[in-house]
Length: 483
Image 1 (spheres, helix red, strand yellow):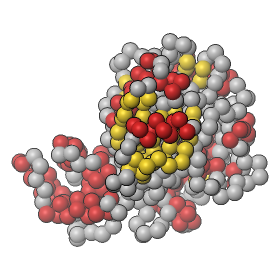
Image 2 (tube, one colour):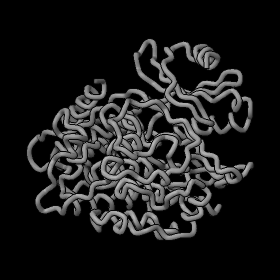
Image 3 (tube, one colour):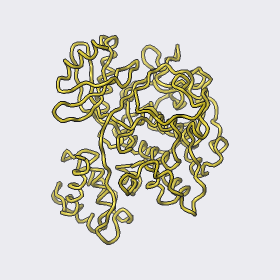
Image 4 (cartoon, helix red, strand yellow):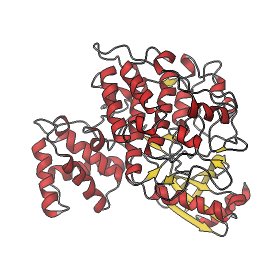
């Protein structure tokens, strides 16, 4: 430990190193603060036992390159990558809100919150898949929240770049993934594709809605993986009858054995999930979910609205009564309303990062040592490995207000090309994904269709100009993001 800190101090002189946040087979994560900027970050350090191995170093660099190629508000970004001697380090955004698993274990989520998280992940995966990157390890531990409750997908450490010729197994026979969420093709060695990640999202939603996995572990991750490959899951409505039929249908389609029988892509999955959630909970369900979703217009065709009032968080959203016309919501239980059986996760062989203390769990809640077989599965030994990062970041999402007339967000006449041109112009001018998403959400929800299209005309003719109305939205978002 002291030696690791000495090495990091030498490699990262601009950072003040903080506490260790987590330790796993593929890295050690520390909190750190940039001395000049005051920015809180997480530093991931490849253990010396691996860094001397060229293959391990290549893997670590590959992870850094994959994350650096993705710029999306629902993906934890990479700030820097440093090599020195036999040491590899990368610096990434740090998250203070803990993981999705923490929230689930501490008492569960409302079904609206589960749907918002699912859509946020699908929007992020759509971004990654369009850049030919698979995640291959979507699970609650890899979904982190920032200080404002924005969910982000983390740890692309076993991501597969499509077309690189890599399979699901390493030269040593390691099957990469987490048995609790692995698609059948991951377990059978068949080719992977975007549908592989969609299966994992389906398995995760099944767990959030039902309080248990589609396939529980008997303590042997190989057995759990075999069931994903060969056995049909119990229908979600049999496990949780209160779940709305439309939601259950969406989840069960994602768990189809054949990739071709799952949703066509992440965008299609997100749209279908959004439609089902609206049928189940009413049109205002996103605001009541307490989970903000950004950059969703290009996928869903409209903006996912976060809570509109300052301080309105998950607790306030979950306590708001559903519309009288909606059926009773099916609560996705955590331990407080019936914990997942301890056998659902199996024995853990990983070290979870330190987190803010959650509320006391109900009696019988699974401990870390009782969690199911997850992480990177060694085909020979069934070993479970994982590492995550947490810390602090601040993001305030846009919303509220109107400039008069019909808001663009409520009108279907805005061409998709105009939305794409807005986002492409942001990228071409170096505007960050979070600022672009916030400005787009504000522009489409606060301006009239005519005002939005007037700005689009400027973009088409000049390539980078902005009308005063849209510029004002960018300035407002920039002020919010600066805190």
